[in-house]
Image (cartoon, rainbow, N blue to C red; front, side, top):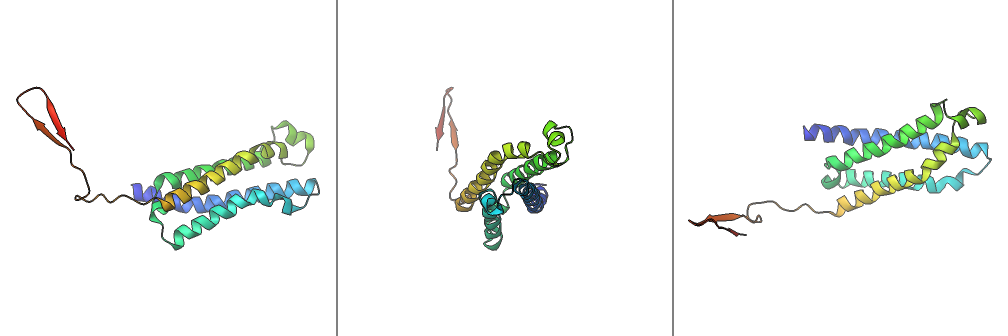
Length: 163
C-alpha cells in the first residue's frame, strides 16, 4: 500500500508542479501587464520553481531513492502545490471577493500578492527538504549492526538490561 501511495504522489507532484507554475505565471503576467511593469522584475518569484524542477530532475537522473521513495516528502510536495493552485484559482474565480468585483480585472491581485511571500517560503522549504533528503544516508539495518536488547530476569524483582 505504501508503494502504491508513494508512486501516486510521485507522479502527482509533477502534475501539480506544472499546474501551480502555470497558474502563478498567468496571475503574475496579468498583474504585471496591468501595471505596465517588465516581467523580468518578477524573476525572483520563479527562482524557487526552477530550483525545485532542477532538484526533481537530479533526483530522477541520479536515482535518489532517499527522496523519490520518501512518502512523507512526496505527500508534502503535493500539499504545497495544491495550496498554491487553490489560492491561485480562488484569486481568479472567486467572484465573492470585494476587490475582484470593484477592480473589474477578473483576478484579485491583492489576495494573490498577500500569498506570494508564503508561496516562496513553502517552495524554498521543499527545496531545502529535498537537499537534506539527498544527503541523508540510510542506516544499514542488518543483523550485525543492530544492537540487541537483552533482559536477564533473576529471582528477585529487579531486571537487568544489557545493551
